[in-house]
Image 1 (cartoon, rainbow, N blue to C red):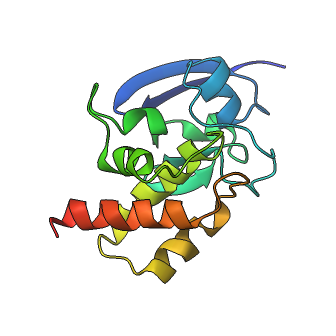
Image 2: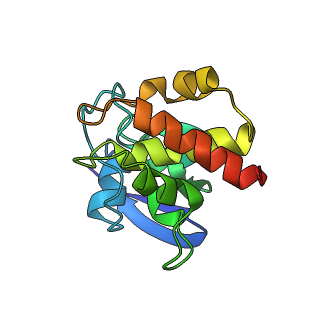
Image 3: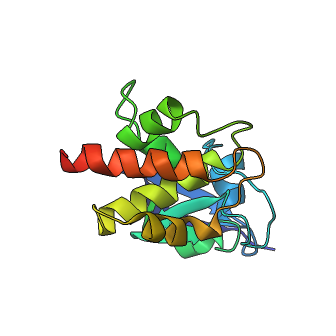
Length: 158
């Protein structure tokens, strides 16, 4: 099977890689690019642990072929912080103790960031609906929802 050459942008940096036609974006991010934030929880798009943004659209990277990133912008959890300064969502997850094992956390952060970019003042119901594709087996969801709501308020300057 011949490899496919892909030129893309990941977290604002130009990236090129070779991949098999059947290789997922998740596998390339983790095994070729070295960005291990996105996790494989299910491999079928049901858990959200591998969530990334592809040209501003929230996707499960386990369901996207790596070749589909050609010419597109990929945003991962690693691109959220500004150097050592955490993104407000990352800080609020810590402040609210809204994580335990951490498998779901990167996907939840990426999904929450995508939500707040589209809707900076969501209701609790909207946050719960938006994050419904992200499964957490450890923390439950109340702390996560409170952290996202708190982050939204801070980002709005409320």
